[in-house]
Amino acid sequence: MTIEVKDLYKIYSLEGVEIHAVNGITINIEDGEFVSIMGQSGSGKSTLMHIIGCLDKPTRGSAKIDGQEITDLTENELADFRLDKIGFIFQTFNLIPRASALKNVELPLIYAGVSRAERRERATKMLESVGLGDRLSSRPTQLSGGQQQRVAIARALINNPKIIFADEPTGNLDSKSGTEIMAILDSLHEQGKTVILVTHEAEVAEHANRLIRLFDGKVIEDGPIKANNTGGKRKNELV
Amino acid sequence: MNLFESFRLALDAIRANKMRSGLTTLGVVIGVSAVILLVSVGQGMRNYVTDQFQGMGANLIYIMPGDIDFGSGEQPVFNQKLRVEHVRKIEREAIYAKEVSAGIENRGTVKFGKESRRPAVYGVMANYSVMFNYPVETGSFITDTDVNGNRKVAVIGETVVEKLLGGADPIGRRISIEGQKFTVIGVLEPKGRALGMDQDDIVYIPITVAQRIFGLESVTWLALEARDENSIDLAVAESERILSKSLSKDDFSVMTQESLLGTVNQVFGTLTLMLGGIAGISLIVGGIGIMNIMLVSVTERTREIGIRKAVGAKTHNIMIQFIIEAATLSILGGIIGISIGIGGSLLLRMVLPSEVTMWSIALAFAFSAAIGIFFGAYPAFKASRLSPIEALRHE
Image 1 (cartoon, rainbow over the protein chains, first blue to last red):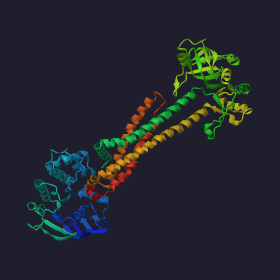
Image 2: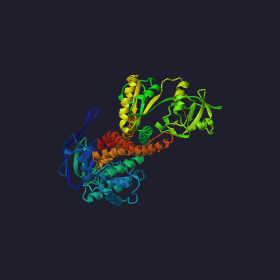
Image 3: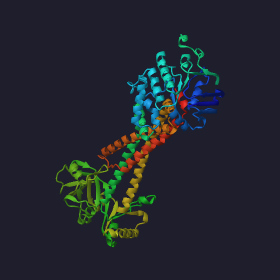
Image 4: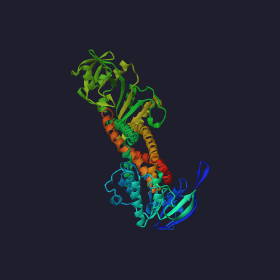
């Protein structure tokens, strides 16, 4: 499933000041690629991800997923697109607090119209595959950060999407949990899914094959990952 | 996603906030139970009064003083120009009237020994007992001789026997009414209580005597009994013609059982609607409470809405979820309110006639559901329109 972005702009007006969050971006991402998008905060990396993740609409420009122009779609058509083709993993996990792990994972299947019994079965299997088979009825608050992120991953994968967007997936996790999460993303890439990772951590970004660096809403670097070209801070450097 | 799923989601959300949901529902509970309770009282009164009129005999025609035709919408006129001599006139001239009677209704001080009370003291004619199906239990009723001879005799009700005479055999006893000595000649069959009034706390005396002791010329009512069902209308026309010779149109009102029932139905129908309407206002207030809480809930759960949208919920999925939640709240309130309304009405039956009607239950239920949907619609619409990105950013 390819992603083709051409001359994409997203311009906000914040208290009368125009902000060019995405300022003319053109990129192509091939099916099965593992791409890191890096950049300082405010560089437009999250906005770009939201647009190609069908959560937000650009001001102008073109974005095609699998040949489908997504800028033409209505809100409900975008919802269908997200449901069928895209899985999200967020920095803050974004689980529904009063629902159990199982119910959180079932959520996309409810909107896909899958029957209760099948939902339960698929969500249980998915949670088992991320190592949470014994925490099905736990609420997010009863789980560690790493466990919550694994629930979120299970939810992202439940409807078998082709593209996974991960927005700072390790940002709120300790290094051990972060490593576990990245191992899961690596294996998803190996299974042939397109993985798009937004991060500012070098060690995380280096899991990808390709690095796209943004600055002020523009692509300033795009190429294969080489050791030490990510330029981000390393954990041991933070100390 | 089907409605059943939405309903389960709604129940989850309601359970998550038990206290708040309970208090929100309370408004609807009060509204619905008030509607059912008040309508049941209105309906019960109407049925009671209707029964009373029907028990009086179908061929009776009532003539009341003044112009008090409620159905006409005209301003009523109150005066006291009906006399006993009008009874005599109708008796002489009417062809279609089998019996003619008149009565004076008043209250008076009745004494026996040291005991004293103020029961209803009615002056009636000899045919009263038969015409109104009001037989004596012991002794005899007032006769024509008693009326014509101004005899000071009295027929008393059960309560007077018990409270005034201490339950002693009353026949032949001397009691005083408004300072005059009367001989008790009969005791009426007990009738029980109605609308909070004791119908057995009563003393009947000859109408002629009542006129003297109360110093009245006028009578409270005239009544006639038509020969048969077919001559009711003829008897009405006839009595109107006879009375018009000496009275003007505003001095008397002729009513049949049918027209009285019509009036009663009309009056109580309006009353019931009014009571229901007043209670309905509290239902609307309850609905506003639901809207308020749903708006709070939408704001609180903005992030949840964002999450749902991010994983593929469409606009209408969110809309339906919140509408169902509001409707579930108010229907829950409706069900509780109906139970309380029915229970309350059964309790109330001990003191007032009350009758729970199916239509008030159906109406209250439908109304509570409609209120949930109506007042839930705006918050639900608001929720469904949130952009997923904005919603996810919400703290």
